[in-house]
Amino acid sequence: MAILDDEPQGAAPEPARRGMGLPVWVGAAAVVALAAWWLWPAPAPPPRDDAPTPAVVTRPSPRAETPAPAPEPEAPKTARRAPAPKPARPAEAPPAVEAPAAPAYALHVETDLPGASVFVDRKYVGVSPLTTTDVAPGSHQLNVSLEGQEGVAQTIDVAESGTTSVTVRFRDVRLDASVGVVHKHGMGSCEGRLVGSPAGLRYETSNKGDAFTMAFRDLEVFEIDYLAKALKVKKRGGKTWNFTTKTATADPLFVFHRDVEKARQKLAAQ
Image (tube, rainbow, N blue to C red):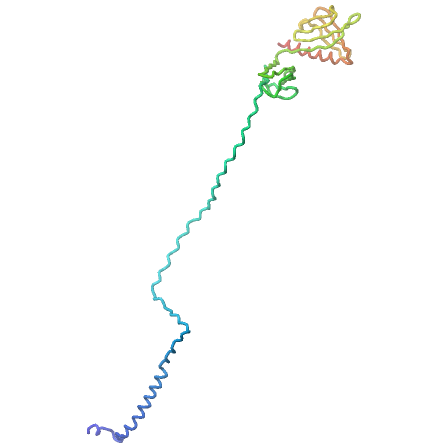
């Protein structure tokens, strides 16, 4: 045959080649089986009843991450308002107290020159003109003084009801002075009382021949000698009287002379 004719010279005969190919195939199959056994994964052991069930971890499917929204700006903090105070309970009204009844009496003092200081029983009451209920009814000593004027002192009686009004006139000449005296005669003496008033001088005595009443315009001499304890009175164009006192000093005569002279000067200025 052509094929047989084409075989190369010196090649083994067909039967010999067949005898050599069998072992080769067997070895190759063994190698392949061993490799398959080595590489094939061992079968998983059967699950045990008490073995824990493996947790199945599932990976979330990848998706596009959405950016978180920007935080909103915080509203400005306002001052915390203090709670409104609870309305206080209205206090109970105190029981009504009856006001004392107003006094039924009053004293009203006025002066011809306003602004005079008024004293009652040496207690300051106020400035004239004034009306007060602080002076109880009865007899009191009233003193009124004003700068540049002679003070006025008099006794007043406040009535138990109504208003007792007193008017003090600084411009008026007030004189109510008197002193006990001894009139020295040429021979002997007599006792009496020398009185001074706005009308003039008056000598009151039991000796009718020595008594007199004399207006200030008729008075020519009216002087005192303190050391001699003597008071001299002379009527204009007429008689002279020399008076003394039984007191240890001439003080009573001095005070009387002073008060009379003030009244004379005030009358002369009018």
